[in-house]
Length: 281
Ligand code: PDD
Image 1 (cartoon, helix red, strand yellow):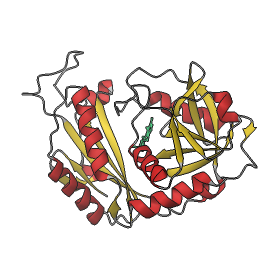
Image 2 (cartoon, rainbow, N blue to C red; image 1 turned 180 degrees about the horizontal axis):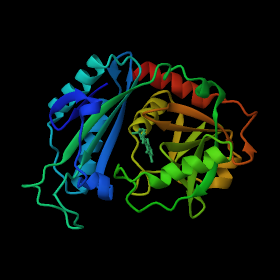
Image 3 (tube, rainbow, N blue to C red; image 1 turned 45 degrees about the horizontal axis):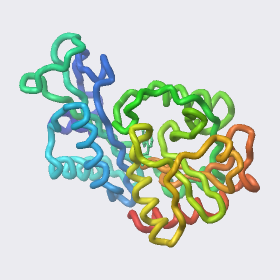
Image 4 (tube, helix red, strand yellow; image 1 turned 135 degrees about the vertical axis):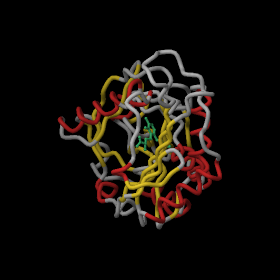
């Protein structure tokens, strides 16, 4: 695989980052995941806008222009022959040469930028999407700025492990009785014809897929309500689903021990997945 590191393309085995990089020492960095379908980037603009916002919130400078970033994405898709898959992009505050809690001077410490591709044949035609996934509920003990897409992914990673150990696929996080989001996706329930999902705030990541899916749902005259919902409400919903750049729209058929509907994906989530895949590619 060819990867991109600080302005250069190179084989992954040659890419080297300093042990003093603040991404490595302090999880001081941000990332984006953009999916690729049929060799084309999905929602690229949305991801670059959010990337810039994450950088601004952390007082980091972008080491690359938007145009060059698009070019790097396209070049990696081309050289690594990605038809279906993902591009991972990470920008960390760089390596000041020592460990210090204080941010280094951006004039002397350049950010580290890394991009690599992941080949995922069958991403769109996923068997999981036909069956639906099971989630467990766990406490949301993450920090208060979940709107910033930082690389601090230890708790989401632990959440996935808890799900795996419980024989489930993912975890929904609960704060004050309300569902915030999945470990790496936004969460939704369906009641009758109404799609319900938490409103945007610092409590959740402002999903790029979320924005597109809600737009398509409204265009298709589906009713959308942006408000918090409780775990109890979710357990008795007609349907549930999650959205993210890596799963698109993924039906949820079980929450803890509560089976939703007849335990199959239902009507709304599969339809939204279909619309999303049609409209985004
Ligand atoms: N995760 N919420 C969280 C906590 C996420 O990590 C993600 C994305 C989302 C969905 O955002 P989007 O639709 O922009 O992908 C919501 C990525 C895919 C990941 O960490 O791999």
